[in-house]
Amino acid sequence: MRLQRVLDQDRAELRFQLDGETLTARAGDTLLTAILAADAGWLRNSEFGDGKRAGFCLMGACQDCWVTVEGQGRRRACGTLVVADMQVRRR
Ligand code: FES
Image (cartoon, rainbow, N blue to C red; front, side, top):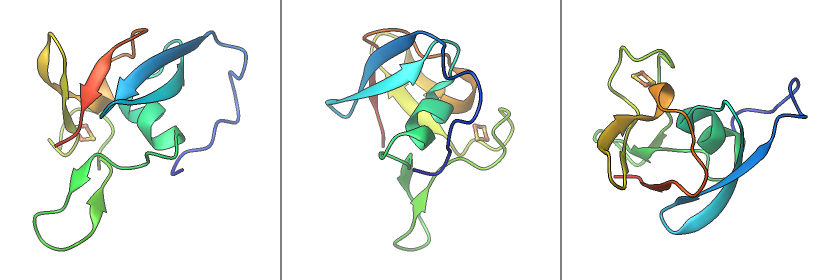
C-alpha cells in the first residue's frame, strides 16, 4: 500500500478488477489512487531494473501510469475515474 486514506472514508465503495483480482475503490477515486491505496501498489515493471513503477506526476504529464481498460483501450490511471466492475490490466 503506497497511499493511505485519511479523508473521505464515507464515499461509496466500488469494486473493480485489476489483472483478474477484485479490488475496492471509493467513488471519485482515479484508478491510480485506487491501485496505490490497495495492496496491488504498482502499475508496471521498470524497463531499467527489477523495480516496480507506480506513476510519477499523478497529473497526466509523465506517461508513467498507462493501463488497459476493457472497452476503452490504453488509459492513464491518474486521469481515469474508477467505475464499478471496470476491468483493468497492467502491462
Ligand atoms: S502518473 Fe504521470 S501521467 Fe499518470
